[in-house]
Length: 214
Ligand SMILES: NC(=O)c1ccc[n+]([C@@H]2O[C@H](COP(=O)([O-])OP(=O)(O)OC[C@H]3O[C@@H](n4cnc5c(N)ncnc54)[C@H](OP(=O)(O)O)[C@@H]3O)[C@@H](O)[C@H]2O)c1
Image 1 (cartoon, helix red, strand yellow):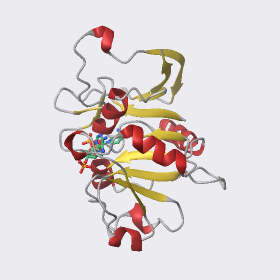
Image 2: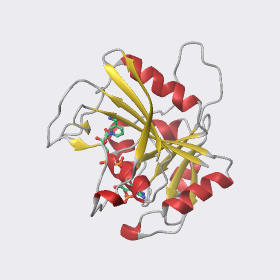
Image 3: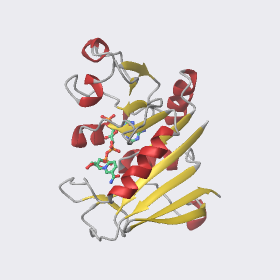
C-alpha cells in the first residue's frame, strides 16, 4: 500500500483563489507530468468539494497513451456527487468509486459508480485507514491523492502519506487563497509530518519537488 499526495500550488502554497479558481495555477509541462504520475498509480483520489468545483475527468490524457486508466475515487460521505458530472458519466468506461458513510445512492449506482460504505469518524467522514483498506481489497494499492486541501490535510493527519509530488508555480496568491493543506492540529514542530526531499526539477516555469516520508 502506498499513498502519494500531489500538490499544484502557488509559491505561497495556495491551490485556488478565494473564489475557488484553480485552473490552471501550474503550466502545461507540470500538468503533463501529473498525467504520467496518474498512469503510474492504481487510483486517483479527490474530495467531493474538488469534484463539485472542477467537474474533473481525472483520466490520463497523454499523446498516444493507450495504457490502463487509473480508477477514480471521490471521498463523499453524503454522496453529493451528481449522476450528471463527468466522473459519473464515464463510470462505465473507467472504474469510479464513491466512498460514503451511508447506504449507496441508487442514482449513482445506476450510473455505474461503485459506492463503498466505510465506518465514519469525526464530522461523520470516512475513516481514511478503512478507506485505504477498502480500496486495497479492490486491488487499488497505489493511491495518488490530488486534493483538495481538506483531503490533503486528512491524509497527512492520519500519517498515511508516503510521498509528496509538489508542483510550484511562480505566482503568489496571498492569505485569502485556499491553502494546499487544511488543518493538521500540529501543536509542536516535533509533531509535524516530516519529509525529505529526494528530487527537484524544473518543468517550464514551475518547480517539481519530490519528497519521501522521513
Ligand atoms: N491546484 C490544485 O491542484 C487543486 C487540486 C485539487 C483541488 N483544488 C481546488 O481546491 C478546492 C477544493 O478543496 P477543499 O479543500 O475545499 O475540498 P476537498 O478536499 O476537495 O473536499 C473536501 C470534502 O471531502 C469530503 N470528505 C470526505 N472524507 C473526508 C476526509 N476524510 N477528510 C476531508 N474531507 C473529506 C468532505 O465532504 P463531506 O463531509 O460531504 O464528505 C469535505 O468537505 C477547489 O477550489 C478546487 O478547485 C485545487
